[in-house]
Image (tube, rainbow, N blue to C red; front, side, top):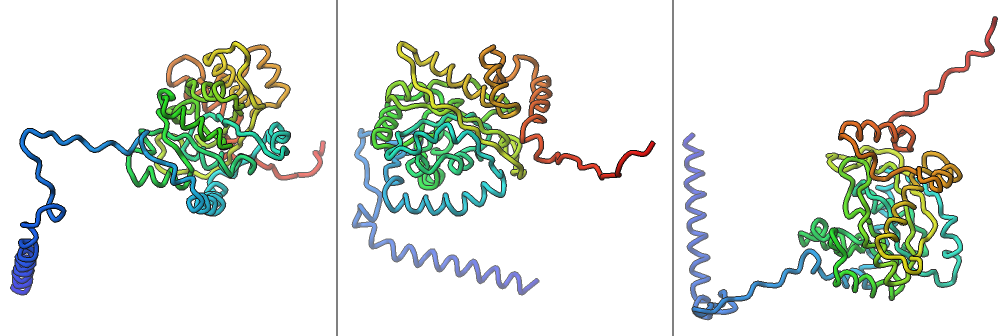
Length: 338
């Protein structure tokens, strides 16, 4: 016990001497003022606040320079691909709908618009998008989530080539930036819902993708991502490995005299048709789409328990419903004897 008191007393003495030494060293510098000390502010003067450099104001040009692009390519082809393969095992369908554009000497930029259920969606999409557009792909990420802290904003810009976007509406600053990137030949990955699904059903599409497509003349590719919500949906503490499926639809262009609202509804309907195609087949989905009975992304307008029950029922038909339910293989007992 005496030894502990002695050690404590010595530590206090050492801390006191260290503080005294620091004061002696810093005291001569005090008379020199700035930059050794903070500048003084005259009375009556209000110092303007420093401009906010996070959120939608975060600068991302550096992330598209050669060194950052090479680093991102290595990360995408290495750790990200390994993580996506282990967790999601994506099955990719519908690439034939983009084959004609991919075979061109200079494939045009595209706007990929998938439904959104998980943070895993972006890594799955980056691996699924054909190389003709993957190399120059830019990801639109929520400014208030991915760019609220400097370390998070830096990682998002470097690893995903993400740029901040207001999830409520596409502002003029974001629209001008997107237009400049598209003019440079870059493609865009944007989630029209504006955020992850809170309950497994999709949210109503916002008009960002439709607006940018109409203003730039670039086609929108509807995409359905299935299974990521069951692996790492909103509210889950840790991922649960499973299987996923990505289905690309036919590229869409704004029709003459079609406003953004109608164009956006057509994009949402196309993603809903892909949802039906995933659990049935192309012809069944086409027939239901023409009859107006294709799968609704937002689910039924009813009580929460019934929505959850119907979602579970739907997932039994999807690939995500087979993540932890392998088909039972009965033993062969030979021919039945009468």
